[in-house]
Length: 144
Image (cartoon, rainbow, N blue to C red; front, side):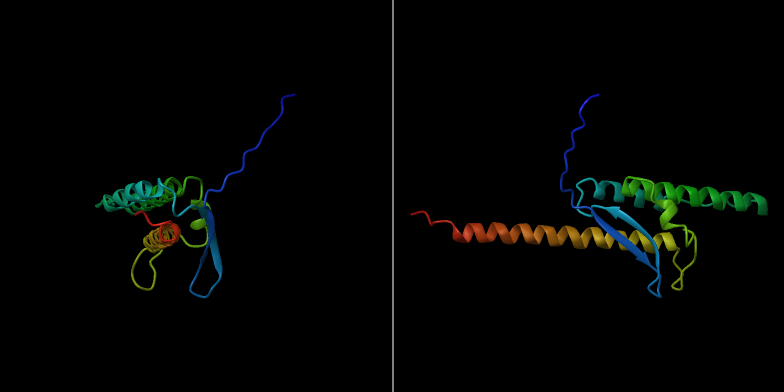
């Protein structure tokens, strides 16, 4: 039997718990908000949602099928964004097309907040790296 080797690397991944307004955890997901590919995937998902529309003039039965199709597409987009099957956990307690108190769909609120996490964590990591660079530059001997 061949030997199995493992290589463990630091990816910067974090676990994010999704809570409702009462503080109850209704889902979670793992991702690296500073992944160099996350911005491209986030942009592609936003573009997809901006082009999403529901067909009109459908019978009641066709409307239900159309809503189910859209919900499936929303789940697929979140899976693509985060790089693994996360939609079942994110939308198990609250469907993606649930209308929230402010009138937005649940999936819109979730996507916006994920975008905020990406921006916040990326900026913190950049600031930390810049602080190290500034410290190194300040400690470097001056050239004459």
